Length: 320
Image (cartoon, rainbow, N blue to C red; front, side, top):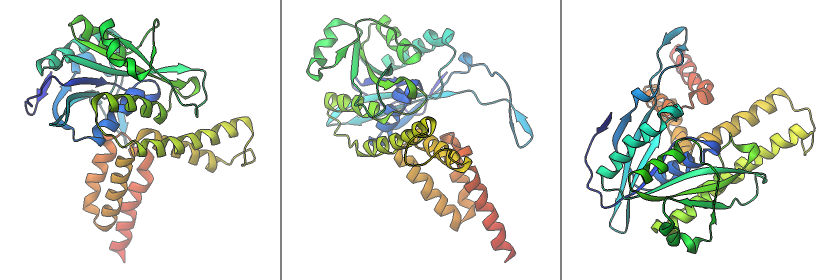
């Protein structure tokens, strides 16, 4: 089920497992860490027993059974920082399989000497999207809370953490592993949208706790861009703002696509995609690498027109 490419020698790594969830809080926080630090992928979880296809996919008239979601393990080693073991799951399985899947992952983490787990989650609240979100904490053992008192976090005394980002820390506790869950507030009306402010405030705590020296400026810039796009949407829905309603279909489509692009991709990935587009414009054989990158991040639909234009341009050059 878990295939290891290499067997890294880790020393009591902090274990951080994540899946996509509300506000993409856990998932995007982990993606930023993976991009910012020198993480290396070393194992793949093929959880075919935990996913069942609900249908077939059709592409250009041809149907096929979809590939089952997977998960990937990464590690970060440094002589100046604690080791980190990171797991990023592509999709959450049906919840009836949640505990069983969590058990497999925790056992693998313990095999690699992990003793402490950190998870992330969203906490929807009636706040504005420009409000600086607070971070809450809940722990597996009361003694752990003492280690985080200096961060002045709000303690979640009661409630529920739904999905795999919650279940896995519960299973970790069952397997005698200590840990915490950091929950960042997000507005109720943005649960389907990435929230960089939430990512920033979680990462500030993690940065201080693990002494990672993270540069959070890319997230700060993305927060500003996303908030501007949300403002446009809200103003449109209210019939307010500088742009008099009704907006044209083109305006609405642009807002939707811009917001979709910024909520799906880290800045470093967008830059990489733009680089691949430039290379493919000069050499169409490079389009294969570009397509693989778009498919990897599941954003081909957003770039489809530009991608197909590469071949139209190449065809015109052949004719001339």
